Length: 427
Image (cartoon, rainbow, N blue to C red):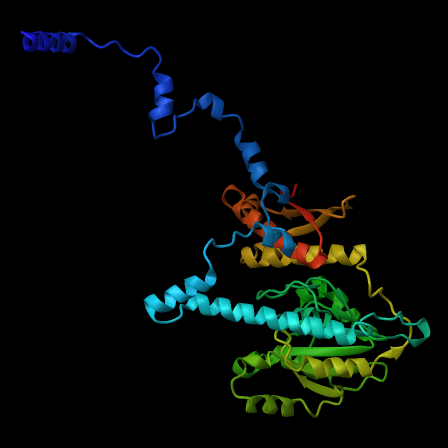
């Protein structure tokens, strides 16, 4: 009887219709693995014009850019929970050899120990000598050096290497430098000012091209204003693909000796030449030019032969007061560096003729109370299609340019930098 009653109870319960839940939305929210589709009226808060304007502006405050301070970076790094010694021992027992990761760690630790020992030794032996005494004005020497050559000869790379920091944009594209850039190197009582100039090209008749006269007329007019002139050319390209325009430029600059100016010839990018005998062949080709006092074989990117060139320039310095303060960066110098850094990133990520048609302006420069810098640049394009390419999808390209430029400016200035890049259409 009890079994029959239980069967009747179950059948009655199953036959009763189930009542729908009064509020199914909370259950959907708690148990559903998919997000609900929002109402179109709530999502359409921004118009297409506002969205495009927001994409064309890069603000470094909107991105989590890692800090340049190594102390803060080391604090955020999570150390492994296991003991490295036991882990290395287990790897040797299990795999019967040291893993590549452990070998890298040991080499890194050995390099750190050597660097620390070297720093302690230098601090113990030469601590008093490291403090540089202020050079008196009557003991100061200076020299102004102009660097000229064809486009992509390596003028900016040599300038950056001699100065020790980035002062000029470097790119594989031609005509990267559009105006004269100043870089200063100070050693002891001697200061050398390097002037990186735009690339120069001569036509078949030996005169500058029309576009060169319009865009780079200042480079030709200032050739005779420097104390010493460096004529630089790409020796690797001269060997593989000789250009008659570059040869005419070298011959014109070295045709006759200038009593008011010394000139030297630099064969750059020697590290790319496989057969070193070819370097001697090129040097013999220009050895009879009376305008050049010396011929140097250098690599402006890697520094080969630059030491000999530096020693020669130090010997040519003239007894006179310095033109620049060697201990501080002037505001004008820092502004030029910011323009060059952003321009270099622009040339790296935007191709064809677009970067050459962009008008680059420094709109705002402020030094805040906490020591940080607020820098705002405007990139003005002639066409809306160029503006879209420069901005990228959802602002991806201008954002990448801004992030990389902001990181490099932080490392150069050694302070926090708030960089703002805005892409505008010329009206």
